[in-house]
Structures are given as C-alpha cells and as structure tokens.
Image (tube, rainbow, N blue to C red):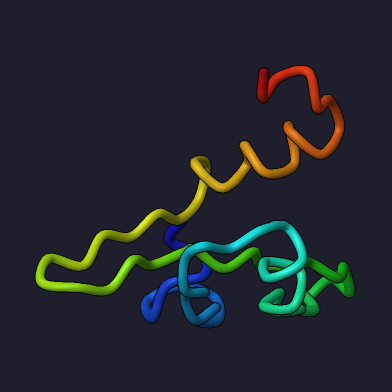
Length: 74
C-alpha cells in the first residue's frame, strides 16, 4: 500500500467508489526501476463523506481474485 502513497515510489491517486477493475486500471501508475524493470502501481479507492474511508494495497487484490475466478463472489 505504501508504494503508491505520497511517501512511496510514486503517488497513485485514489479512485472514488464505486470502482471496478476498469477504474483501477485507468488509475495505474507505471514506474521504471533503476534496474530497468517496469512496475505498475494500483491505486487505492476512497469513499468520501463525513468520515472518508480508504482502501489501498492488499485489499485491492480482491478485484484481481474476482476477475480470475468469478465463483469467489458468490
């Protein structure tokens, strides 16, 4: 989660909820490391309101899991 934060490699701004895989893909930030590897940073999601709530990092992996196996969502 921290790699895409303001203190990480490069900031990946949050995507507003509701957000599906397409919104996360649109928010990807690409970084080239000093060794030449290309890495994509997935943005977190944010629910704005009186008490904003955010989700970043490992929690967003559920989108990939559901995309690869839709039965997980049942």
